[in-house]
Length: 425
Ligand SMILES: *Cc1c(COP(=O)(O)O)cnc(C)c1O
Image 1 (cartoon, rainbow, N blue to C red):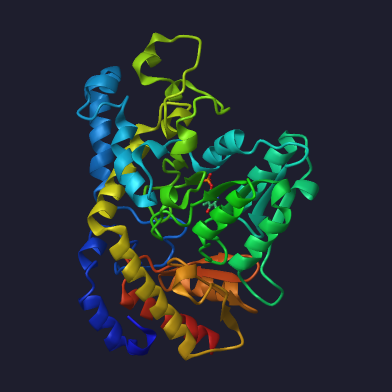
Image 2 (cartoon, protein in one colour):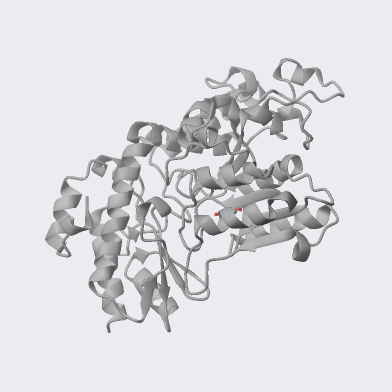
């Protein structure tokens, strides 16, 4: 819906909510409640997605199988645990635009990022740099810096952090391309947070991948804020590897099992160096307990441990919902809903706040990041007291994410009304 068709009245929000094609999906989530029992306005799906009501059943089923069968559930549960993670392969590959053999769910995110860098950050004296976006998620900064040091190099020499131009708040694709063109021969790895957690910028995955490959760099993305938020085509974009967590837009619950993508041209190469564990070993004879490691062909060959079945069960509840909702349709609502939030905020501008997220919907997901001067933290806390949940990132950023699966035009309207009243008080 173009912004010209929006209106700032509450009636408009109510009309839109009434014809929301995803209204029945909202019903499938537990929405946190205010003390009076009414629904909170939960705009924090970028941090922890809400719990699908069906999650309990999926987890309870496995608890029952454990109670009923003990160790035999590995082979004889209704969904045997040894191949349990395979149930997730197809739906997760659809979500990230990959071939089934290219994805695996395992571990948690930062662990997977390290495992991928073990295979794909292979620095040499001539080519040892990592290019990352400035202000990357702290865990990613620590991960890349520690990898650089682990290989005997110094982050001061080997880490390139690419920042927005002075006076701008997000990074232009052409600036990334130029930097890679200029220094690409020295860059071993381009590793970018697909949607930046702080600014909400969604990067141009295809152009960045092409630019990196043109200079012989490996290109990987941390899709923590992208998976379940924006449609992805990891295979077609030719990305070398990607990792993501599933507790943000993918609603798998706190610390939920994470995901990993390895493009098939690498995934089928058993010679790629990696850290190995028994779960990545050839399935045919994993239980023969032989001393030599033979990697499973495909992303599964990077598994180390047998996965948490309870966590994988919780993720099943979520991917079923995504399969039904369809990512492309969700994205259409997401663009409209985030555009509506932007429209409402633009109606009452103030020097006290600005939107630092890109204005074009192609360059962002569901999140708008607001730079709020002076007492922004107090405003965020006051909103929370009113049951309007967003989050605060020091020093001055409020992150607000209308999630298309469970947020409505009325949620967005309620937030904008309270936020703007506090700003103009
Ligand atoms: C959320 C997030 C993390 C969190 O890492 P965990 O290993 O899941 O604790 C790391 N990186 C990015 C980019 C994130 O958005």
